[in-house]
Length: 317
Length: 243
Image (cartoon, rainbow over all chains, first blue to last red; front, side, top):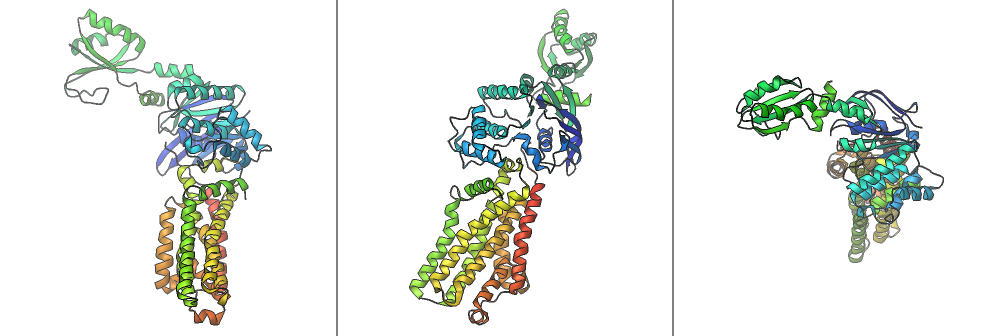
């Protein structure tokens, strides 16, 4: 049983705040650290792993501070994001070296076990430099597992993996979580987190935006107001019809030249910007409205579906 | 000290083509020594020029630079140092081990060939081989410690180290008298001067800028202090990531 506790942790680099007043507790099971790129996930993981001092606040594993505490590493397994390893050695030699660095009583057995767990036994005698990205990821995983740690920290472990490797790693992490280990992995992809994590911590722009089970997070995300850009053959009439609906809270009629399409390109035609409070009802009612008023819809585009805007909504709440 | 850290460090220092690079410098030194002895016979002033100028002035600082920065710099650059840092090992034992490996490399590829070149050039006469061999040994160890510290402090360690070795040690050291007192080369030369004895040293114009006591103390400060401080700095090394 390992419990990682972050208490009011902030980290700034010069005058850039990378992590802002984050308090969270991560216990046994699989936890996903979800957030867009640049949200501060890696900075958080570095602080959790004791590689970076918090500018303020504390990080503790089972009540013991992790910063400048090398003993803590007998209880932490880390899978770094960067790919570089000692690639002049073979996978076997590298995992064995990691076992020896942990001063395990039987390093050979531990290395064999770890390589078997990640299914790398067959390729273990090849130089690491000849491995594919997925194989390197698995060897990294083996080095993190070699001392059987109760806490696993993985920084973007699915990056660059093909779907099969991804499923395999997910099964592995799920099994680790079921064994009662504390597994924390970061990702910027909602679906990955959805498939694997029992609990989710959402980080946006350095702040702890939300935490909870996947259902709660998903609900938070779908319940936010949705924005659409709509083009039709009679925008003004459509605007009047839309604003009469309870599912919409705002309509803006944009004149020619003001329109920026979802792809960021400036458009020459006019358009409507609609803010829907109940997006499920709105998408049902819109075609009916158009039909009733004899308006032709050319284009309906959600304008804020990117992960960043979904996340920033969570932060702004 | 940790045997596994030592093995990994030695593998990455001597692996690939780096070993060839490390071999090239002493090979040139021995080749020149052999040629000189064969063509010009034994000439002690030539020995002093070659061992003091080329071996101690160029080969040793360059080897110290390659071994000292190479023992830890690439790992910090590519982030693989994290595999050492995420272990229950004290940071100072990591640095001490890496420094020891770098020092051993400089000794094998620099100090021993200097001794051999001295023997080829002057035999055991005038104790030139021993005097410069010893100087090469301590200078190499000091350079390794200094450049390893530099690699922990800055990502530009190789450039900074080259500037130091070439500009400071060679140019400033040779032309600005005061600056010579702050030169690893001069400190090491004070040992050669002592080994040769006053009269031989004066005859062959071996004249260090500092006395042997001062030289040895300063060398010890650089070796011990540099390694200690590198260990301290490694504790607060910030790992960069792509995020």
